[in-house]
Image (cartoon, rainbow, N blue to C red; front, side, top):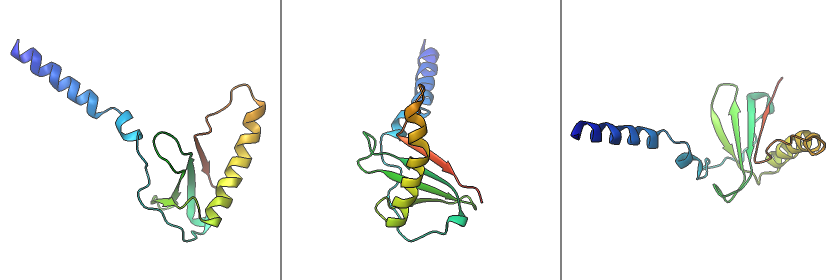
Length: 111
């Protein structure tokens, strides 16, 4: 009986630690950068709207070297990128029946 209890507790611990819910209920960006990063150095830009997980919108860029950088959503050049991403995806989504979630938009840059 004692072995069964230990196995159940071990399984419960493993399931709780693997749960993504705990990690998603907080801001992903602790510190942001407002300096301009040349677009040719960016491979991907992710926009996460504000919500219950975070009070401010987050803009997360990945460079072509794999480095992840949190961009200040209030910097003028970042606002331009976010506006372009939203303009590219939202008008297309409004006319379709299966509208994608607007909370997270990811733009992969090619160039």
